Image 1: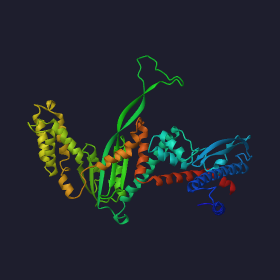
Image 2: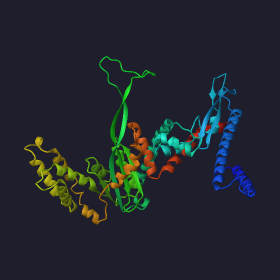
Image 3: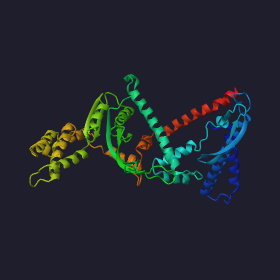
Image 4: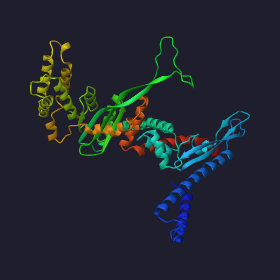
Length: 480
């Protein structure tokens, strides 16, 4: 809500500008719409920056004039004034921060903070939001360059953007956890208190690899001193790189394009499936909802899905493209008759699976494994693994039946989601992430993908104002 003085100034300014344009009949001062827009934007930016500077200057003077006495009852002296920048989307203002000190009891204070609602804080929330918005989509170097292009006068170091990215990633995960916890709590309410539920839901799950790196000590020989850095004299370390999984899931109502996504790092497998269930609750899951889970048949996925949706109607469907890949691998391990190609065998086996004859495929692979050697140690272990894969999922491959019901048979949407949600940011060229920081960027990407971005920043503003109330309490006590 704007102060009434702003409305009065705006009305007066608009009238004066109207008169100015009316007199500029030949368009000498403002020749076209582009010129008018540029002039107005420049004026608004300069005016707004000037008003912010007025605010902090007046509040600084008020803080000096009304500084409270210290615990001994004596009015403390203004010992010094420390200037620090407050950077906004309009540019930077200088906050002249008085520091008061009592010569008797040696108490000290910064009374201006009670008027500003903050201690020394360089970046406004609007700048933080813009920087994190950009840095969560592309490298921090590109993000700060784009930030300055869009907001002239806002200059930020790449490392600052990275720090803000991790800081708000941590807050974003807390925001997500609170939101999903609330969704699970709603699902536990009596049916009469819940909103209308969904008849059907599809859930998908997949994992993808991202590059991570840590700095590890460099091994030296026994008794040999470690090589040290030239400036600080610290033991030198080397970058150890590896690949780790990111767990991704989605929930959707069949036939609708609005989806909810879950993203978790490799060490949060249990939380990934908890998130999947909570997203289903947000989409209207009830005990009567028919839920279909589509994923690869990896050992850890199907049992976790079934556990997450153990209450109600759940059916697992083996992702058909993964099924075809495993058939090709199995075909390559078989001793096929002359004239039968690997692809020909895989196609014939898929045709059997399509009509529900998975038992035949499992029996063939199991028999081939037993015939591949006189004992288990000498047999083709690939055949054993593929037989076990299809044995575990023999009730999840009747694709012809699924299509007849109009059901999906592939988890391609979450695999596509991996590309645009995870890999687009975490697999940028030359980027390596510390494992402890992966969840920060995943949380921000999840907030964006699910349309929760504005809601998240509203929670940050509420948290800021709640903290500001604590700063203002001494001033209010003095006024009382």
